[in-house]
Image (cartoon, rainbow, N blue to C red; front, side, top):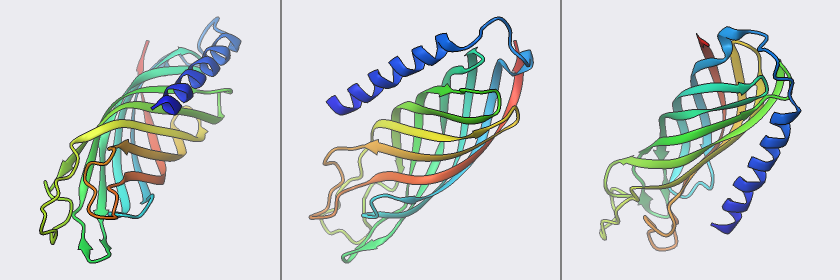
Length: 195
């Protein structure tokens, strides 16, 4: 947890520096100051303990505080496909995040980076595996983190991201750890809301 706190603090300091470095006289496209982002993701589970792949839909609201710095809220749904592992027939499950959104745009078009940080609810079958005689219960959720980097323009965002819900030891079956994490690609479309 200390590492996560340090990472978030470091990211905040970096974001503050970039924010003050941006020219804040006026927005190039005032209609893009507030927007809804709707997107889709696909990825592979990491590590591949109880899941193999993930697909999802994202919805976010973003306000550009300055032309290069956005804050907002994010949610969505990511479906993880269960996999067979050491005789365990792991069930599918889903992640529904409720998170804050931070984005940094060094230029009007091009490279960007940011993260979503909040709580990830894990939903689906109550049992981790369909053939587990101990009936181990899946976790309800945990700290949610989704750092991403990518390319953006006024309409589209293309990203590489890592999504993780930290569940501690909850949901472990013997030597199999419960993992709700994936490395993936995403695309989202920006719907302008104006000033």
